Image 1 (cartoon, one colour):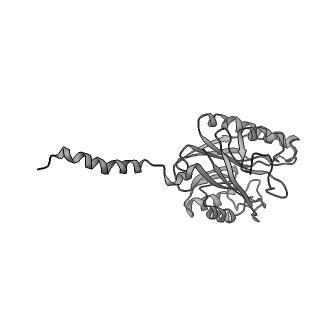
Image 2 (cartoon, rainbow, N blue to C red; image 1 turned 90 degrees about the horizontal axis):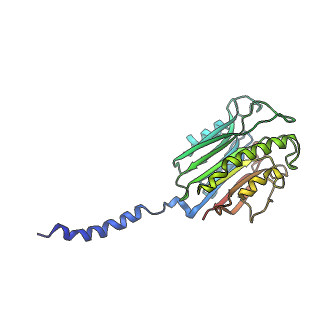
Image 3 (cartoon, one colour; image 1 turned 60 degrees about the horizontal axis):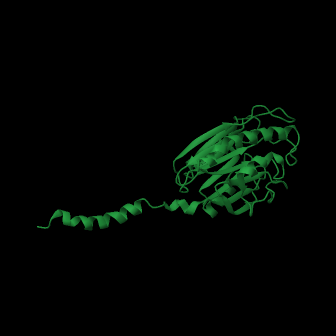
Length: 275
């Protein structure tokens, strides 16, 4: 009879490769690359964005001015996970374009991995054209499994009003207060070794000093590191995708697709690689 301990080396030779394979980097880590689609839907359908998500194989989608009904389409029909943050209640300040549904922002991801939600209320104001009743928030998800590190994906929609491109006036003062609070809150996340993607309908041109805190912390998803790029709606560039600069986030591509729905904002498609 063979001694059982003589079989141990052979058993270990079989088990060790299996254990190593079980702890390998998951396939969806994609070498630290995140493919993302972002769009201001203007209370319209998300079909164009959905097509672009499928075309590029995006793992993350962020939306501003999305109706709650569209958000639940992504969760219930498409099998994506995510969170919705309300900006207006049903029928409120939206000319009922959401057909009695709430309107807000959303962060969605696929595969349906585990995630933790964070919300931050942003300042409101009383400048010219200010409409009471709107809630402005920064919505963030801590998503596990898309890349090998912690990934935080955040989106927001800032107050519009006038003077969007100049960085001057009462409406811009509201946006400046909103972006400053958002950046102050996000500041420690980079030092905690998290990878951050920040998107939004910021209603501010890239040359405005209002966005200085954003460009100081993040790199925009444009070729090179510049405050430039193609317009995103009506001849203006006011919609963005950013990657965390201190941790080396860099865009390997960015393209825009005409939406033709809602308020006419273009769909942004970005690919950001983290080291």
